Amino acid sequence: MGWLICNNQGTFLEAGMGKFEGRSIVMELELSALIWSMQACSSLGYRKIIFEGDNFGILKYIKEEAYSSRCQHLVNSVGAWKSRFLSTSFVHVHRQNNGSADLLAKKSIISPTDWSLF
Image (cartoon, rainbow, N blue to C red; front, side, top):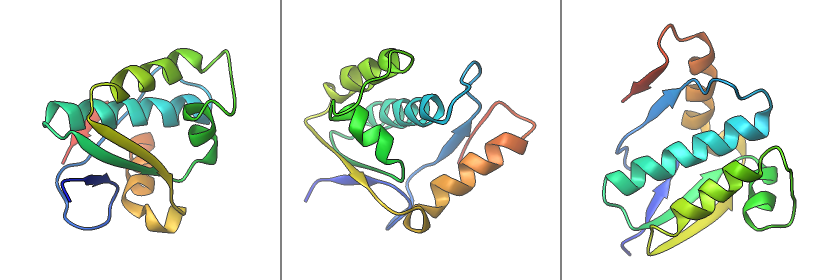
């Protein structure tokens, strides 16, 4: 009760896509998208969030089970944004259960704009 699941299941609240310049590896892109999602949820006033994603590597970074000097500044940003919520959970879901996010990621590659909100 009182939790928002940040994914494509259930009631659609808001979505967006963006191009993240200067990101050259998948992990940088995934972490950047998570940070953007956290910023959006915070600005909309949500305080108890379950963030779902299909990348196991992200979970390992967030749980400090893996380290990458290249991505550490982004992991630190996730931690900073996490502290703005009352409670958060980061959960792995299979890609077929996260279809909207996967579609937005693919569309952002071919989109003529740098970002879009829906």
